[in-house]
Each structure stands twice: as structure tokens, then as C-alpha cells.
Image (cartoon, rainbow, N blue to C red):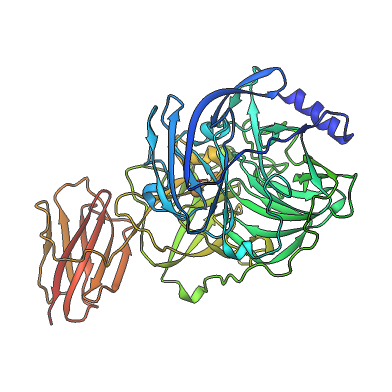
Length: 576
Ligand code: C2O
Ligand code: CU
Ligand code: CU
């Protein structure tokens, strides 16, 4: 689609030469009982050309779910795609069993019925498939939708919130089409830009304060949002909630998976056209979407160039300012929320993550990439997090491209990027953020409410090509309640703990199966307090753990041993 796209971009330099299409505004479901049907269909992204798609209750995209904090959701998702998929509630804090990660497959013809309470703050979330190795294919072909969460705090503010009138969801995506207008996944020539599945989109906006809910739903591309004529706008919310006060911006970089809510004041602009742009020429190298996707022009990325969108300033949406609505919002509140970020000193634990290319060298941008030297394996739990832990996750990106890191279950606060405090637009509640190439970053978060000893949550790069196979840049973590069910269980026949009781300095747990790997253990005292919590990085014998007890005061303790598929709890005694 290269030549066609080039013409399209050239035309856009003379605004109005190319016909604009009003963007689709997805329908809404405003109920706690939601029925979604995933279906194959066709859709004309290009007029007269049928493209095969996957959609939700329609040919492409899905309805916007409008829900309230506290709602008890009962969702039925019927999969008529003829193949497996999953549906994940990106950014929402839900039990692992309802999270829709790769473990929760909805088979062809089946219906999945997740039920959960909405515990999130008012913000913009989204749902999309998350099948192992096929996330990009299912998302690119069209399955995704918005979730708007409302709460009493947000409802009390004088903000635009009439859906489709002064409050617009904008799913901004680039896709790659082959010569027969079919969508290609897991490629780097995504040169067709669309907003809500509409190419060359146009939107009538009333001459008042308007809210745009921006979602970067692209597989890989980062956008650098701005308005023509360098007009300012107000950022009011990040991924997981309102900022405490609006931030005035002229540019807003947004990585794949991330959302932002902005207010634009069109009050005095009736009759004018304002364009939402991406000023990608200003993106630093080593970002997908910049002129060079790597931190050196010599690093090639297959299919990346030529692509008229890379390193260029391009139009995303033409907004034509029309008459005011009745009772318009014409002012912007000066305060929005009262959210207190977690303090660094409250952290119980720090967990390091390092990103590396699997094949270093000039071709390294083509991946695959590892996290802590491993790639996605459904059978390995990479991290075990105690319920109610406050944790700092640290990142070292030893690859030549920036990666948008995303974690399920929680929202986090960025502590620093390359040692500096985050810019204002990254200071709110986030679930996805870019870890710069060759750089470092840290965030703090708390793992509350939900635990599950078997179903993990995921963390991964939200560049879907990186997340997918062959070697997915993704890992899984369990949140476990280490104080629940503490009893002196009989050890399974294939496990031994010795010497017990002991006056010595070490004890050993041995499992009979050499293939069973001990990933972590915790020692818990009789008050249920964790006195030691250790991840096993390298172990000579995977099935054997020798752990120190010399530091323990005399008394009774429990040890919890975490393997790839079970948790063994046993009481032991330290004597003096
Ligand atoms: Cu938006 Cu794990 O996904
Ligand atoms: Cu997610
Ligand atoms: Cu990545």
C-alpha cells in the first residue's frame, strides 16, 4: 500500500483535497449484563474493497462498555470466530480468572462468562484478545473496544461526558494491508492510519470544551499527539484515572496500549478545522514511529522503511468546529482528583527486569527480545508476588528500541525514567509506559484484593509483534496470599523436608521429580508474617532447595515452596 499511502499523505498537505469520512462512533452498552459476540466479517476500510475482519457485535471494533465503579459485571462472550481467542480487560483490576489472559481460552463456539466487580477509578480502559502468539492477529483484524468507567469523583466534576456529543472515544491505529486489501499481522509496514476503523477520518466537534479519549490501539507505533497551529490542550487523565489537576500540553506521546483523556477548548473556533496530528518527526530515534526505530541509523528493521508515517508529521483526525450544544461546558476545572501516589519508602520489595535482544547485532530490532533472559513459557511462573505487597519494579532496557511495558492487575506510578522524575504526562496512574532504549525506569505499585495460586497475570511488551511468538516478550506472575490456609500439611509423598526440627543453620526441601523446579519460597512465622521471601534465580538442582534458618529465632514457622505447578506448605521448628 506504499504508493497509495504516499498519495494520501501528499493530499493531506493540502487539507481538503481528499474526501474525509466521518469517523465511526462505536455503539454503547450501559448495563452490568453484557453480551458480546466475536464474529468474522468483512468491512470496507477502502471504499469498494472488502477486507476480512474480526469484530465484536459487528464487523469491526466492538461496543463501548460504560460501567460504574462498584458495578457487578456479568459478561457473556460468545466466540464465533471459528478459532480460539481470549478477551482481556486492559487496565482493569479484576481477579486473574476473569482477566482474560492467555490461560483463559474461549474455544471456537464457546461462551465465557467472567464476573467481577468494577474497582477501577473513572478512566478509559479497553478490551482486546490476548491469545498466546495470536494477539496481534486478532487485534489487527479488528477485535477491540473501549471501556469507560465512571465514578462519583468524576461525576461531581464539570466535565464533558455526553458520549458522542462532547465526549469522544478515539481508537487510533495503524495497520498493514496487502495488495488485496487484507490485514497483515506481525509485520512492520503499518502505513494505513485509522481512527475508529475510519481512514482519513473527520469529526464534527461543538464550539465548547470537548473531551477526547485517546487510545493508541496500534500494534507497534507510538504517536506524538498535538493540534495544528500548536494549539494547547489539557491532559486530564492517564491510563488508570484522573490527574490531580489538568496539565497544559502541546505534545502528548502515547505508546501502544496506553490511553489519555484530553480536553480541547473549541469555544471560539466555530467554522474552523483543527487537526489532531502526530508530530512523529519529533520522536527520538529508537522509538517505533521515529525516522530510525533503533538507536543507530545502521540498525535495520525489516519492512520499516520506506513508510510515509515514520518520522513524519501526519494528520490523524480532522475536527470541524460546529455550533454549540445546549448547556455546553465552556470552562475547565482547575482541580480534578486527590490521588496520592505510593511513597517509595513503603515498598516491601524491589524486582528487577532486564530486556535484551535474543540476537544482538545489527538485526537486533527484529527481535525476539527476552525479559530477564527468558521468553514467554506458559508453564513457567516467572514471579510470585505476595498479596498486599508494595513493590518497585525496575527496568534496564539493553536493546536498541524502546519497549512499552504493560502489567495486568494493577496501576502503577512511575518513579523515574533514566534517573529523572517522569514528565507531567507520565505522573498519573499508568499501566503501560515506554522504557527507553539503553535506559532505565522504575515504577511502584501495590498488589491488592485478588490472589490466585494457579492462574497468573501477565506482564509484557505491548508492541504486539514483540509480545507474540516465536519467543514472546512476556512473563507471568502469581499473586498469592501467603497467610491464607497456613496449616501443617502432610508433605506430599514425593517431597521431603529435613532436618526438622533443627538446631542447625540450614534446612533442605527436596522434591522427587527432577523436572520440578522450585521458583520461590517464603518463610512465615506463626503470626502469619512473612519473615523471608526469596525468588530462586539459579539453582544447581532445580528440585532441591537449601534455605538458611540461622537467622530465625527459636520457634515454629511455615515454609511455602512454589514450583511451576504447585505450592507446598509445611510447618517446621527451629530449636536452640
Ligand atoms: Cu493490552 Cu496484556 O494487554
Ligand atoms: Cu492488560
Ligand atoms: Cu517490545
